[in-house]
Length: 377
Image 1: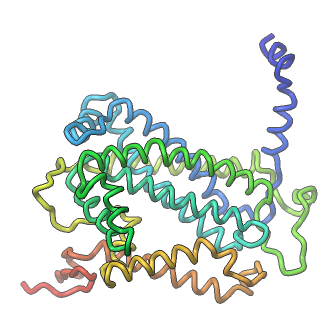
Image 2 (image 1 turned 90 degrees about the horizontal axis):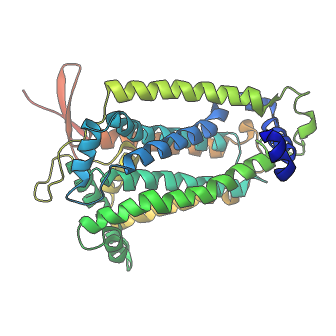
Image 3 (image 1 turned 30 degrees about the vertical axis):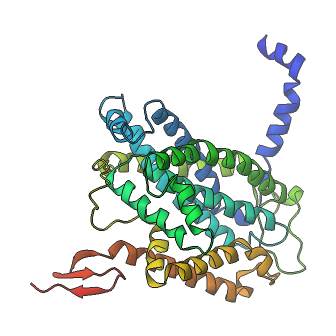
């Protein structure tokens, strides 16, 4: 009865046919690997992140005097509050990892080449937004690590000629990290960045569905038409590809639960502006940038980082090679591998810097540049 009532008014059959058509849209034969699930699984974890974030918002108080205490209350008094907080904290890492892997997959499979250039630009913007979520969310617990990490991070833009001080003061809401900084980061984290995602993700998905997945064909060789994909070894998005994404999402969810229970992220101590802790470091995904800036004067380092970011963003326009097969893209792939290696190396050096580790029974101290020195007994 309800279905009949709805169909008479909203033509539900047209909607269900439209939905079925797009859900059953065939995927090309080369899109069966795990790499093609990263984007969909990232969106699933993003929805989970929104859910846990809303739960936390019911109890979180974004003021210097109450932020830390409200999180303690969430973890100790709110039913399953500790679990929601751990899911949200670890979930941020999961999303960053998945988005980075998705980005690397697109690069490796020539997914940024004609006619998919615009989707690369939108995807890169989404990557920056995800990182901005991590940056702004880092301060919200208002603990020692978050406070002093933000102090260091917001000093970096001040080295930009002419506008640096303005940018730094705008981020902080003054000359130092204070209540205004927390308020600004909170607004950016829960309003501005979600609005940006709400705008770009549908466009990103639409363009992906419109152009389809890159098939990596040779020059002059046409991509398989959609009507022939199933006959040529492709598979439907639903249920085939959707099932794979669901399996990997639930495996990821099990891992997330395991990390939340057995390796919880500690809240630490409440922020103290008068006590600087040793070894201040950002989240792991900012460690490569953090370490890179140590090797150059800040203005020079920022210029190089800006240039690298600009090159990656405009890669579809800068890479003039029309080939999509990896065997004929050796130069760009080699440069990409070197870049990824350097990023990982900088991250490791950033993690090890200003720390002491015991390796094969010997103690080594890594200085600020990440250079190890054996510690005398």
